[in-house]
View 1 (cartoon, helix red, strand yellow):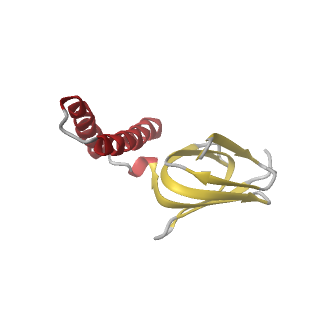
View 2: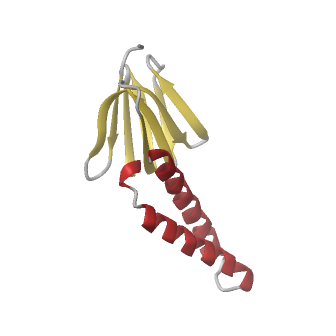
Length: 140
């Protein structure tokens, strides 16, 4: 096994993750990026989406994050994010219900029931909820 990497995911309220891992995939601003052991120093802005990592026991884990940044240095990854939720902690029923509601709102745009600005916000929310739904599937 390669050298372990220490992963820390920090939010304003707590340290959501602090464990040794083998690899990490993040929703970087310009697309998904992967980090393995002995990676060169790296800093990235993160957008909302899925973080996935494999721990040293070869188990996959999934997190939903919203906006933040990441620094990689000396086999240590620090992610600071506005929000971090473990896949197993995302409420399936609430997510599916909210996704159904936002889809209805988006469809109502064709009838002129919402403004262009409201539609743009709804589309972003739809993408966030879809990301959470995918993480739920992977975490089951």
